[in-house]
Length: 335
Ligand code: 13P
Ligand code: SF4
Image 1 (cartoon, protein in one colour):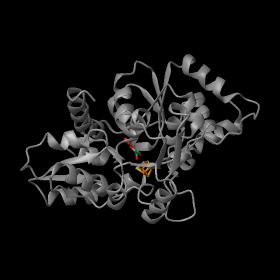
Image 2: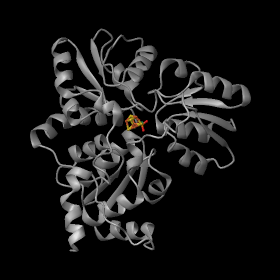
Image 3: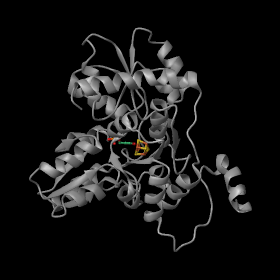
Image 4: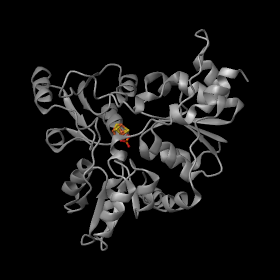
């Protein structure tokens, strides 16, 4: 091993990724395909990843689809092109497999908004409540939860509890408020939110709709209520993608992270997709955490099998229960 490679490997905890200069002539797509075969690795990617990563993935999906794929894979190594909580979920379901992520620092503002020690105290104040947590949370929060949900199954899972069952919903207050509205529940909401989905400007979207009167507004339920109120369709990333494939409209304003537009444009090249504008002039509807992963980091993490997701067994077992409950309910519902 070259001394600079050994030094980079030692730095991984601090940097979060392997910082090694690559030969610029290296065909990364071909190299990643070769590594997949050599290592019997499966590459799972979320829709918010950059287009190059999506194009080289074995499976691209939303949080539920990714968890389901992770649960059933026969691969020896899971390469998770997404954020930390997603790769962590894959590890929780596959303790004997190696799970690697291109950048260990690819976190999530929503997950960070719910620290386990604070949430534990909050939960203790409401002992009669069950805890339903959105998958965008740490293993520590999962371990404190009765069941996990994603934006694809939150409604059916909440509805699986009796109407009079008090529920705490964490960590996303926007998704929680939306589920309260569609189910008629009154869940107690943790005050967390996603930095990307709270950035959309109602005023700019309204103006955009005037210029594109035929365009439909489609939104992720992590968006704030005023945006959801004027949306023509609300759904998870997979839900939004499916909708654009089957719906008759030709133009869509898309209120979620921009990465999903790649699959929308690939599936419906004849349609126009406009990213919903943020309330300032930056490209803040790009998730800075998701976008930490690059094709170079992806190649390096497969080649050197680091950074790896690890976790204490006690925590893993506690976090696994509510995830399995979610997967069971979803399978029964045909999701
Ligand atoms: P889904 O892909 O499950 O809709 O989640 C969106 C998201 O914010 C992931 O971080
Ligand atoms: Fe977290 Fe929001 Fe980024 Fe998803 S888009 S990973 S919820 S910060």
